[in-house]
Image (tube, rainbow, N blue to C red):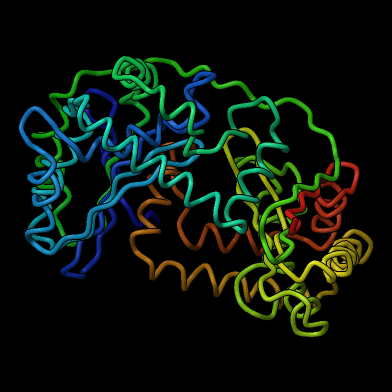
Length: 409
C-alpha cells in the first residue's frame, strides 16, 4: 500500500503529497536540470540560475521574495546538483499557499536583471574562492573531474571563475528553455491537508504554466582509466580520495553497493574504515566512504585526511579493507548485522522530513514511482553475501580506481 498520492497537471507538472499530522509543512519543487546539462564554457550556469531565482520577478523585488515566507517564520532555501535543482521551504501548514505562490513566481517569472546578475556573480566568485580554501571539499570536485574527464558530470557545480564571469542573460534564457521540461518537474508536499484541496490550490498556480516538453540531450560518460594523481597545495595535512565509477540509480546492484558502502565507511563510528584506521591505528581524524548514484552512472569514493607522514600507511590500510571485501564472503551473522544496522539508519533518516520529501520527489521524477519504506527494507534484505562479493570485485577493482592526493607543499 502506498503512503503517498500523485496528481499530474495538464502541462506535465506532477504534484506529490504525503500526509503528516504535524502542524509543520515541508515542501519542495524539483526540476530535472543540473550542471551536467550545461554546454562547454557555460559551467556554473545551473547554479547561477538557482541563485538568481531569489532576485527579481515581474511582481516582486528581492526583499519581497525573501519576506514572502520569512515574515511568517518559514525557512526557504535551494540547491543545485549534477542532475537537478531543488527549491524547498518549511512552514506552518496555514501558510502553504504563500509557498506555492512564491515558488510559481520565482521559478517561472524571474526577470534576471543585469544589475542583480553582477552582484550575484561576485557572490558566486567568492563562493568558489572559499570552496578552494577547503581542501576536504575541493578534493571531491577534483576527483570527479579526473573520474569523468572531458564529460559535463566532471565539472564543478559552481563553475570556474572564467565561466561564471562570462554568463549572460541570453545564456540563462537558453538554458531554461532547453532544460526546464514541465514533464520533469515535481512539486511535493509533506503536511496535514486534504489531497483534493491541495490539487485545487496547485492547479490554481501551476496549471496556467505553458507546457515545455523539450527533450534533453544527455550523453552517458565514456570509459575511464585508473591512475594516481598528486597535487601540491599550501596545506598542512594530506588529503586523499580513492574511488571510481559505480552503479547508476536504477541498477539491480544499487542496494547491494549501498549496503557495502555502509559496512565500509558509512554512518556511525562502527564502520570498518573508522574502526581500523582511526580507532585501531589512530592515523586519521576523518575517514568515510560515499556512494552517489546518477541516472546513467555512479560515484564511489573513500576520503581521509591525515598527517603527511601517515598518508601512505592509511592508504595501505584502506586497500587492505577493500581486499577483504573482494576476497571474503560475509558470514550469515555479519550480513544480518549489517542489514539490521543499515535498515535502522534508513528508518531514522525518515525523521528528516525535508530530506524524505525531496528524495520522494526525485524518485518520482527519475523512475515514475516511489518505493515505500517497506519496499526499501525488502530490497536491502534481498541482498545476498554472494552478491556483495560480486559487487566488491567489480567496484573495488584496483584497475578501475583512481587515487587523488592533495599534499602539503
